Each structure stands twice: as structure tokens, then as C-alpha cells.
Length: 124
Image 1 (cartoon, rainbow, N blue to C red):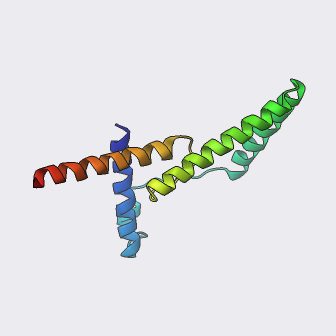
Image 2: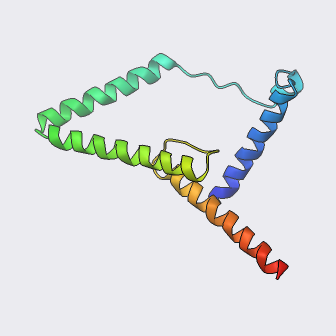
């Protein structure tokens, strides 16, 4: 199920790239099928800063500053490690979401390997 969703997204992005390459991406016919999503950057920034301040204050009040630093370091290593694994196995996807990139890259590698093995079996 997850891979079907990625295939759909990949098809949309591939079509978008074809439109960009053909320089027709800004035509009304192409753009009218999409909805423009606007965001409030200041609101997003404030939420991030507020969350950071809340976590730091809570860790200080509970005398857990060392735990906070270890947890932050662990999460950072986990996310950057998954990002790097995904980049190494499948350079088309490098989302920095824990596990997503690594799992997707491994799943795609296994799928490609199965197809390759099936092709060899058919030739024999």
C-alpha cells in the first residue's frame, strides 16, 4: 500500500518534470488541476520556537537536561542516519523523516532485486 502511494507521487512528479522540461508547466491547462497551498511562515516558525522553549524549560524544571541532550543527539543521529542510508541506496529520495527514507530505499532495492532475479529465472 505504501509503495503504491509513492508510485503515484513519483508519476505526478515525473509528469511535472516533463512539463518543466517542455516549458509548459506555467500554462493554465496544466496549472488549473492543482490547488495552491499557502502557509503562514511566521506561524510555523513561532510553533517551532515555542516547542523548543517548552521542551527546554520542562527539561530544566525536571532536572533532566542531560536526558534532553542525549535524546536530542540520538534523534539527530537516527534521522541523519536514515537520511544517509536512503541517499546511498536510492538517491531519488532523501526525506528526513525517521525510518521513512531508509525503509523506502530498502523496499525499493528488494523489489528491484526480485524483478532482476525473476528476469534471470525466465531466461533460464
